[in-house]
Image 1 (cartoon, rainbow, N blue to C red):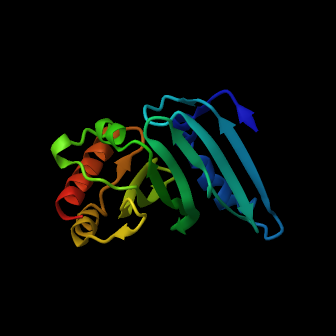
Image 2 (cartoon, rainbow, N blue to C red):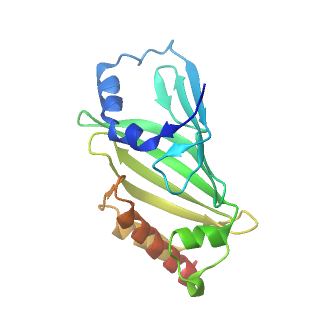
Length: 193
């Protein structure tokens, strides 16, 4: 499907429907398989990404958003590599691993307000997070950086920082706190990565 615009805010503001569909077990049928792809050249109310290729996969009654790509002409592409829904006390969470492949690191650093003195080269970074479908917030479980040769950079300091924030949840609609968190992650990467 192609659409003129895609409203991510509407999508996340109404994420409770994931919880309701999963609780109803309506689609949890091992004979149910399919793929829905929605492409849009415009994402509404989003200051980072310009377009999206949203992919909704159903595989034997389980669904995910693997291979969904958000595109920023200035920064790069964010791709969902692996995602699944987890049930915890009748509440569903989306657990996902995303990768941001940087095309223009200067534009990226500028967007996330990283000081020119604290900028370091990298090709991409991955984030593993958990999104609460009812409360519309998320937490970061892991951050990985990759150098210009696409080799993973191991940093105990980054792991420690992420671990210190593991109980901190970020509101999708309030990007300032998450931007400040990312800024701190990149400052640690600059010093110890």
